[in-house]
Image (cartoon, rainbow, N blue to C red; front, side):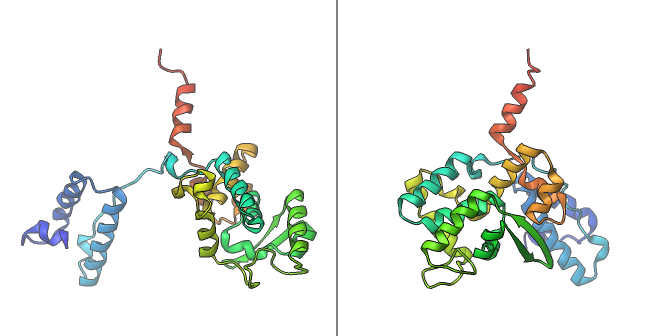
Length: 246
């Protein structure tokens, strides 16, 4: 353990932890990594019964903006959908539109059924909670047309060729194959980013974080706030618009 090496045989006390923590910071370890090290150390102290030696974690401020290299823009999303259409994978294009226009989790795609498309809504049961998701009218028409083409009379619409529900990995893999054709960085392309794009678009349009939390199925608004962190470029633009530099 790096802590033991740092001590060089010195006695373990609450006072010896702080310089080790400072040493990790000087070595440019990320705050989250340092806290992970401290959590492991606290676990060891707890096992040994050294409760008076527990280390205090670093306080990390909530991120003000996210890495733009991981942010999927609306234009990139539209190019991914177009690429899926161009390759003849209508099902994948529709699946991406479904996630992005409703904000559902990739694991909830199974609830997008023929019956749901006819009713314009679906009930999702997950993590001990049931929530109702409304489906845009245009999406319902496209889903029903696709179901008719595939001769799917009932049940889940997004399926594999064998008729089984698509797994998270299958969806992820199929999306990754669109990257080159769509001209989108592979680091931005994964199903959960479609949910992020929905959250961002919804909040910008209606500024209602409480309703958004309900739509996304979050128990805490703090979780929803993570979805609304702007990109560094957008944050910089906001600072420039303040015009506080003469």
